[in-house]
Image (tube, rainbow, N blue to C red; front, side, top):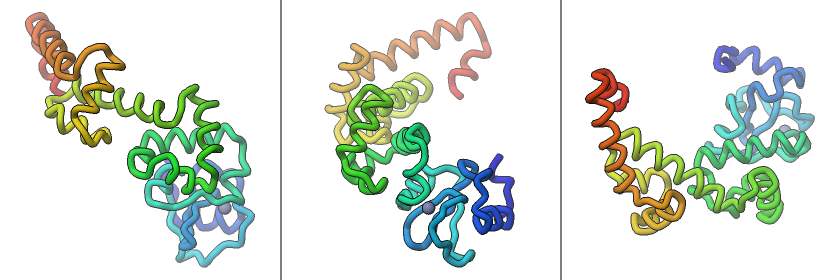
Length: 199
Ligand SMILES: [Zn+2]
């Protein structure tokens, strides 16, 4: 979608500070911040821009939110950036404090926004995301459970097992076993299901 925009169209949108492109793409500057096309701050030379389709891509490349254009917008949009970034694993990589720094806000402000949007604390919400992702991998792939635990951001398999059981009332291994029985049962009825379940 947005990837079909040529860079010259993007350069022009930025030069004109065209609001129509806000939310369509973001541009990052060598100063280390990223902006919406309509940002009122002075623009650097064109050659110094990097373009991103989403704010979370810019955040995951280490750019910080511009205080002039990205934080002045509606809180709803900022919440989306925050949720996108959590999905992309920013809390696993930087912790809540590091994430707040990236957004130029205090950890307390960030905690308040996440609590308002999700009803959970940042760590709790992040953990739910990680455990959901792990459940997907356990039931839809044959990846070893240890690999899954590390890939969703746990540093200890023991901790992963405890949290998983706490959420689903079943261990990862039991869930994998139940699921493979389920797949076998499906296979006996439907010859194509083994293909589907291995995707
Ligand atoms: Zn800006």
